[in-house]
Image (cartoon, rainbow, N blue to C red):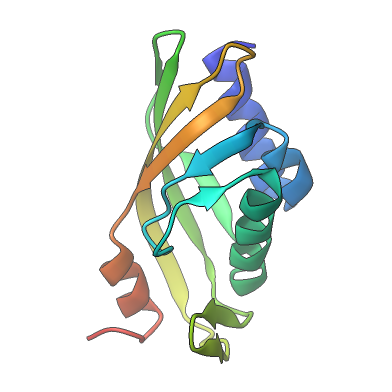
Length: 140
């Protein structure tokens, strides 16, 4: 599958809130280095759970491709703008925080390394986690 097709499927799964479909785009032992997670997220089940929790926090979340993606066969890089309203609880290590009703807008760059089957072996998303927390009223 081409990088364009993979990103198209990725964004479609995000749009539909399909955590299992999104996780299927990763290798069975895929790893995501999420800035909001103290440890890398490992494996499809964990990746699906993280996405489902994020979708629960921002149910109307929308990801829009902000620039044309770059690919070289083994790697893909793309930028999205993520927007939505925090209408669901936010899971934290200390427990759940109630929804704030605040709008969020975050620019995110994702760097994907693909395995021999064209699945995501490793993902490194980059975004302003402190700015995201500030938009939710959680950081000064």
